[in-house]
Length: 376
Image (tube, rainbow, N blue to C red; front, top):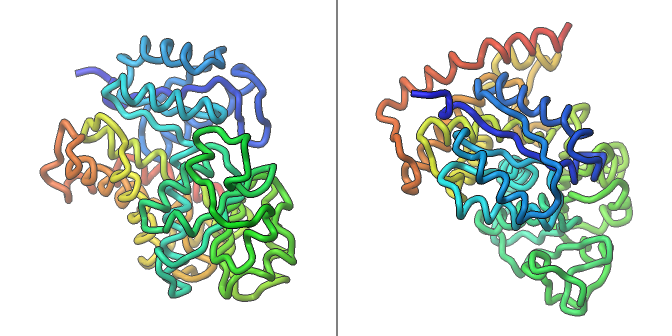
């Protein structure tokens, strides 16, 4: 009977703003306002952006729990690691509405979808691949956890931070990095990537050299997602290997791993069934829905928006385009269904066809208009 069911708080303290770092909550406000606009345009979700001048996770928890009754969900944004882990864990325990740190889980879901399709294209099995994670912050740790749930073997993962491989020699590791200690007797990124199948970059520019890329396995999968400049440029990557799959966070390259493919629709599905949490089952469902959408024929409206003559599932199309109007009707129902099946939904959907049609009406016109503008 109120607007709560369609209202999300985008909350930040401005300590880890993308590409800018710890700039403070006020300087981060334009980013949070932009996030709110994306929620509205892509999923018809109303947003209050809330900037809080507090860095202590305990104090932040107290403030957020006091204002939480206003909202149907909370999106945590641009809060640095490791404090973001403690904050999210505390809030999830204390609140009965979805709490989602998008910098962690949004990146994990979208990159997981890209990974599933990359494995299919290269004929690999999830439990056989060797993975190198370059970076050990919020997104890197969340991605790695989700990949393990999808079947990647923990012993096949090597995580590297600014001081080298996270291994048993290291005495400077927080509890989150300790989760991914490698037993391999290696210390450098160059050693780690030799023979690896997947390079997951969530660090800084120019970490992956041409020589490192050349040493990787056949048909390497490269997710170079540092922003604004990736761990290796597309130009350097494709001049070194002609058998790779390459994705970044940039819109001017194919295969953009963009969180806008996830958070609007994950929250849409969660809100529509009044989910108490966004759990791992819901994240995996979102990733699989995104992966499946790529294999469907691409509508003319999407081709027009990106000035393309054709687009089909392949090494340069492993993840949907952000302006694909079908995203809401693919991802949100998958998330809602996973919430129901995992027992966290309070308002189950009874007619799925009607629900999908309702979703299509909510945002397709907005997305279509943006697509028209983008190709002018």
